[in-house]
Length: 390
Image: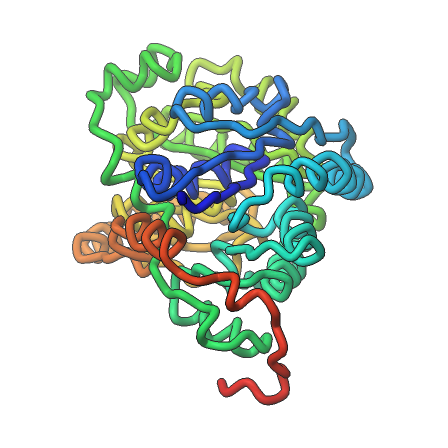
């Protein structure tokens, strides 16, 4: 009998991290993979990205409308409550052998809670990470890990952090980052094809491309739009065409969306919105630079030896390649960082860069473990954190 695996996804970012794992599982006759889709995936404001899930050919068990419109942390809590109420009975009825989820958003905490109380084994991807920014992601990620049966982590550092949390070694699988496999799976596009696909303005054809992705952060709410305006001003002065992505659905996104719409009127700026995985991978391939505070800069850009300027506090403290530098959000700081990443010494150092997060072959390793491991035997967690060897 095929193993029934239910994967939960609520936003484009977690889906793209896991897409190649889902593809491997979907192709395996020993696995019955279903997806429960919720959150921003179902919102037109964030690209209605459930359409991309359908285009990839995965079987959707159900779509659960959970995203509460609002620009506060209370809205996130209400969204989480909606997922708990909307998904619990569906999951109990489907009775999967394993629930899979990724990341550090509120929905994974809910998925882990449902699995714990319904007695269904769970597998958490990207646990054990930690940023020094003090953002809510850290406690949500660690709480999710404590509720999860098994952990699929990218780095030995992440394994050690989970051990510090009291998780036993038998629950932890160090496989590398499954987010990198898409760079192997997605084929190349010529620059002209890429620009047509994202609806780029004519200026993009004759100028180097810079990707700007900036997500809301609670402690930078008052300055976020200033940071992105400063970044665009510096990049325009330096002769770049700026390709701006849509911020995530976290509180504080509304002012950023408005600022991006205004900046998108400039001839040197293209707001590409929501794109296919093929287009985004190729945008990274053709770009000369990435700026902002996206985890793609930390986890993925090193695979392409793409320089990254991380602006502000988000992502600070996470392990990253030598292609990433951190800076403040004023024009002088961004200009100085830009000069650094364009310097001959920086460019020379990138030539030998290896992504510390993996080799782009992690999805197959993960899929085989999800198919074969006896997670039910690990469901109960009798171990005392006081006595777990580090």
